[in-house]
Image 1 (cartoon, rainbow, N blue to C red):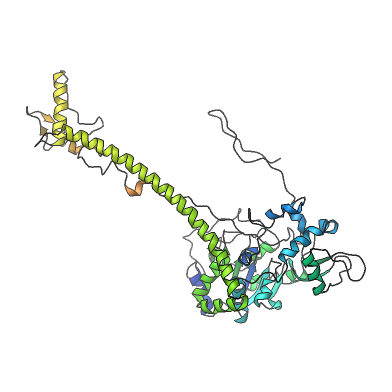
Image 2 (image 1 turned 60 degrees about the horizontal axis):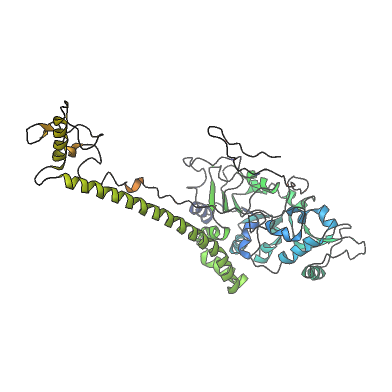
Length: 472
């Protein structure tokens, strides 16, 4: 479930609660005390600046980079049936993702500030990295919809497993076994495909309907039932999306605000509107340290610089195309001007002289009828004061002809600036995705890969339409 079935609200539709659909209007309601119960939803995109990859982004996403584990399909690493037979791939991955190796982002710290200011009603997260806890968000405010690494237990007898021993096994990449001797595998309390969501999710699922502001950060909203939460907010409740692309039905309501950029940049904008920037920056740096703060800032800046570099290349292409076109036009213009100058006699109007020569040629041939101007498409000359040749006959004044005809200027030969194509094609960055999660309300599940033909069109004879590939 993405945004493919939702229609973006018409820009002319006025908001109902906000003054305008922007962060300033959202901040105004918070500062004036009209917003007191904020519900936050987070996905993997909130943690990418911390160095944790999201799941579904092309090239950089976690699923894309699991090929080295020789899985039958990427999602198998979080499949409970596959885990029971082959737990090793998960523990290789767990070694890379285990808490303690990563630090909260400024977005995580912003959520903890909401809790400190008694504004956070509840945080729903798809993430399993525990960075909300590390940022200082109280456990009582967190609903880990897909579980986390915070606790672990035997998958057979459900006996809890000690944290210290668990960390030792994860650091070695070795699957632990139950301490009771039952022989069962131990797994972190992460919701795998094929497992039920934790009771806390269903116990708190109606909370978005109680909120007076919903913030959605860094999730693709593709996995249910988590993806259904934004729809539970009341119609007049402002909903703000911080994500690189529009997702779900965000953007279809009168008080939806779309902040389409990375989470940290968007949160900084909101903090600035609230007057919290200095406090937020100080709290974040105190939490992660100066070295980590610099590293995270570089994580955000690097993609921006790459995007600007790409845009710069495209702009240069357009610029050189314009220069080439202008050179071609200038050359053509000079040729026209040279021709007109050669045909002009001193003291004689350009158009009159040219027209007289043409009419004299036609007269010598015995041709009757009005004389033609310097161009076959020229219109009638000025009738009020017709130009005359040496014999007193009327000829068409080329200066009164159509555009480009005969004043000797290039104002209509050279394209006007507004008529040149200056659009720069830019690519939109991919959106980020949520953590391993579920496809139904009862158990987590995945859709196994479907083999398809490519969508590339086949070349067909002229007059026959190409047909796209079909799903097998």
